[in-house]
Image (cartoon, rainbow, N blue to C red; front, side, top):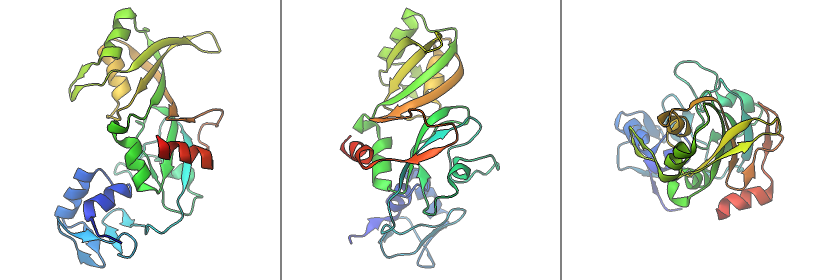
Length: 239
C-alpha cells in the first residue's frame, strides 16, 4: 500500500476538514504507532495505528464498509462529538458496531436526509462541489420568495463568504396544499440554504433535505436509519 499524507487519511476518515486536520497534526494531537506526528508525515491506513486526541483510534481501512441514510431530526448536531455536549446524530446510530461518520453536515435546526459511512473516499466525493452532486431541500418560509427573489437564487447570491453557485429554485405545493420552496444546490457551505433565503428576506420556519444525488428520503421515519441498497451505493459511486 502506498503511503498517504496523514492529513488526507484523517480527513477521509471523517475526523475533520483537511485544514483542521493539519492544525491537529501541528498541535501535536495526532500519534502514529504511539509517536507524535508532524506535518508532512505519511502513513499506511491499512497497517498503522493512528490516534487523534479527542477522537480516538482510527479504524483501519480494511474494515467492512457501511453506508446508511438517516432521517435527522431537528435538535441534533451533525458531528461525531460535540464540545458543548449537545445531542449528536451518533446517538441515533449507536447500535452500529463499525465507526461511521456523517457525510457533510446539516445544521442543528435542519432535518432530513443525512448519509453516514466509513468510506472516506466516497464521502469526499459527495462533499466536493466539483462533482456537482444535487442536494435537494424543501423550505417553509415566511414570506414565500417572489419572482425577483427566485431569480436571485437561480443566478447566485453574494453572502459574507462569497457568491453562491446558481441554484434551482421553484415554488411547489405540498400534499396539504401549502406552498413551499424547493431548492437544489451542489455546494455544502455552513447554513447555506438558510442564508440564501435570509438574503432575499425570507425567514425559514422549517428546512428539510430530501435528496442527495439519486438517494431519496422517502418514507423513512424521523430519527430512524436504514442501510443503502447495493444499487443506491453504486449510484453514488457513479455520480
